[in-house]
Structures are given as C-alpha cells and as structure tokens.
Length: 231
Image (tube, rainbow, N blue to C red; front, side, top):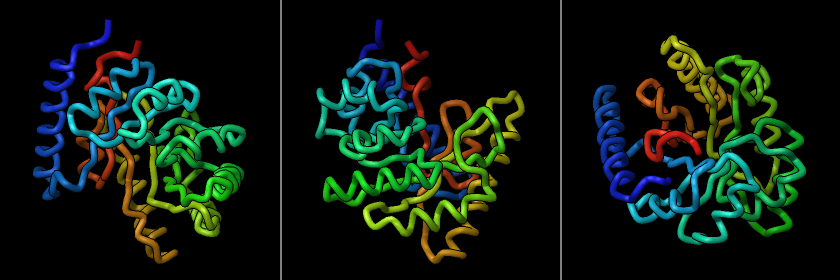
C-alpha cells in the first residue's frame, strides 16, 4: 500500500530542512539546490503529492512508465527524464519531458535535436558524465566530455543546462564525494573552455546528497527518502 500524503509531507519537510542544513554547513544558500522527487516504480499519486506540496518538477527513469503518469497530471508538473534513454525513444521523450538529464552520446544528441526540431521547441538537456569511472553506470567518460559538449552546442534545437552523474554504489562515502568533486571540476573546465556557464549540476540522491551539496550540486534526485522503498 502506498504512503499517505501526510507521511510524504513530513518526509519532504525533513528533507528540505536537511538540504538547508547541508547548504549552510558549506556556506551556500538553500535556494541554490532544487529537490527533484523521483517517482520511479511508484503510482501516479507520487507525482500528485509533489504538486500538492508545491514542488514543480519530478524525475522519472523510464519513458514508458512515465507516460502512464504524465497523462494523468500534466501540465501541472515538469517531467524530467533521469534514466538511460535509447535513441529510438528520443521523439517520445522530447515530446513529453521538459528536460532530459541523461544524454550520453552524439547519436542521442542528434536524435533529440531532430525530434525537438520537428516539435518546434528548444529542448533543455544535461550531459551525463561517468565521473566515478563506474563500468556499471551510464554516462560518457570524462575524457570524452569536451567532444560531447561541442556536439551538443552545435545542435540548434537543444539547450545544454549542465551536467549530471550517478555515484558508484559503495560503502565508502568518500567515493561519492570524489565523484561529485570530479563532476564539478569537469564542469568548471568545460565552462571555461567553451564559454558557457553549465549552471546545473544534477548529482546526489537519498543516501549521498550531503556530499553532493558540499561539492556544488544544484539538483538532488530523491526517491526513497520521500516515498519509501521502490514497489
């Protein structure tokens, strides 16, 4: 049975307080960090709770699963795709998502650009970088990030907002911290080299958001701390 709204509200209140405390601990403003609830495997009520609480966007991992929820609550929410996207689903994703956070290849960039052009829109994207060098994670290797960004900036119907990463699963918290620090360094180097701000750093989830915020995250993607274990 899915949680009641009051449970969600209490968890969201606690999470917002935690984010604020993490920000203050490193001299940042809480306004610099956006909470993105992740509704993966949860019912449409998860998205409805986010709206009721006053949040404006949610994250989904899979296009097909998201479609079943978007139909019921759009256009009240911005839907962001945070999971791996195959090129053959680019048009569907470009049609229904406000931003794609998981762009990790030139082929996908081209497919999204073509789809966005057909829709007459400029589609915001984040480039997914495998900043932790984890073979189990998607994302382009850091050494190839300049090439991917150059390709992305050449796409007339895409807008590059920044970078995204997923830290390796590990008992050692320092591994996540190093991953997030690496993404920030990559962002800074790319921003200087290409003369573009790349303001967004989407990094950090329920278990490692403190480290992510300390290293400059602007978007934390949280599922289990809000909704409980995946169904």
